[in-house]
Length: 71
Image (cartoon, rainbow, N blue to C red; front, side, top):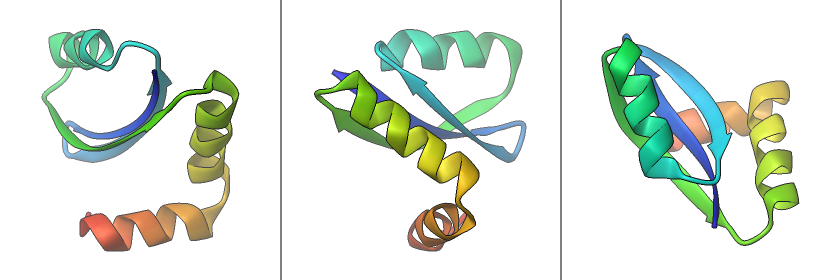
């Protein structure tokens, strides 16, 4: 599985992509105060990376997700 995730890192949203969600969250938590807010799972790494870029580059995608998550 491949994951696109949103965490609150020191109170600010952070969007990322990983193949191992637990390991990546642990890495973030070592350096910052983190809270897992949301994640999506994908079978394909290409699809997950496309979604990550969509959230990072296109304001409407991120705005819609923020509205659903109440961030």
